[in-house]
Length: 199
Figure (cartoon, rainbow, N blue to C red):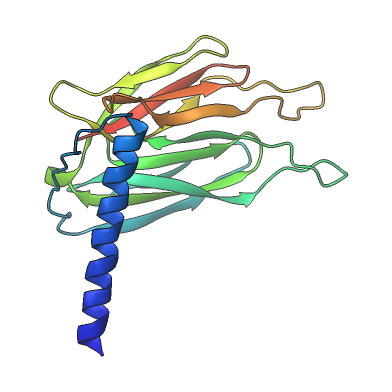
């Protein structure tokens, strides 16, 4: 039974690779066959869960000594709502720390809990920090020469609210740059800073 499962797993992985290659070819509108190179997986990974923050304050998931962050995210412990139950909070930060040793998350007014995926420092990507954008403009975090983006995030420099303190803003872009050499972010109304994980 184990032998059968192994073959099924191998077939699934092969199918996923073929789908990825096909998608890249279609997305780039090219008939040339896509070339892919794969790196060995990291030797070990550790999930670090940060503390639940105070309302509207950041939560930091700090990697252990000798490790760096390769990915991360957040959990909303509480999310502010109106009296009618409508959400009026915002995710103002979900990004790698500038020194690459953890992940930060923050809500506009609720409580957040950051989570980080940490790997040995020798296998961890570099962090590129973009400039703070103008209002409703892009912030581009560009990877150093010889590296490509493998992930990223953003930190809001400001966040629009109405007179009752309800969110009037949203992150409208948080994605890799098309050429694969960085990460960009944009807010609906206010200013933001992109961060890229480069390897």
